Image 1 (tube, rainbow over the protein chains, first blue to last red):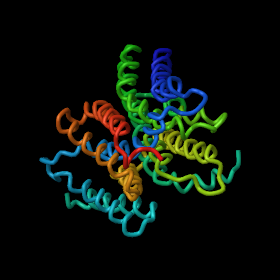
Image 2: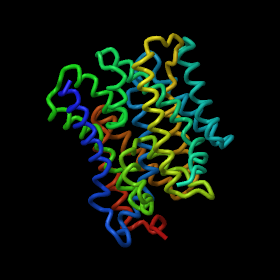
Image 3: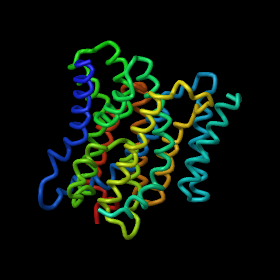
Image 4: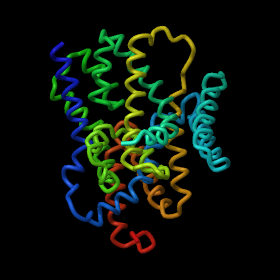
Length: 107
Length: 230
């Protein structure tokens, strides 16, 4: 019980450290260094692309469904968004579509 | 702090609500199966507040793993957060007393929303960031605690609900690449993560990809005229 408590506290502390360290190291008063404001502009779209790949990392292209439901779901989200531009519609439309694909017995 | 920040933040967090309730429930059920009650789940979601680390904590708690092992695994798993903070230093300035909480609550999903969504007009940026972060954590706490309490009673199939997270990232990426200047960084992010995924496999590609992406973007920052800050 004490060990479980300590274990969670250690995990909490390490997680907080990974989130706070950049601020502790580089968040100085005065004007931001150029390289930090540059990363603030260009890292987010790059990380967003990485997060998409991260979500799909366990797809096995050689397995039964070949990752088709996931790829169709991603295509649905992007196309719905380019077509209607409504964030909620794109996300929930694609999610319902994906659920129908994997629960409908097609794959 | 003004409550209209809450009203403005809420709609942007709905996809996260779906994803966190589903994933949180899955995590909460696992806590129940290793004999941890809802108080433990709530404690973990309130203090650790990192989905993948909490999933990992199930096996660590069950085997009473050494603390140093828990620390190292958490560090590897959450190393990506370093890069989130690095790109938010400018954006989180002027957020005052909210800043410690914003940093504590910086999950993948909160990062994605706050970097891709313009602050709605008439709302203080700090309030908007604060309520997006707070709402997202409340969904995670609610989902995980409910999962521990009544998860075993769920009979309809929620399989696939967590795809809302993937769809959220896809839609925010689509939104970002509508702007021309975001296309090269997004392409660099996509290319490096795919290459490292193929080379290193799903368990190891994340940190090398982030390091390579950051170095590549920093190198571009020195030269690229069309990309250089105004």
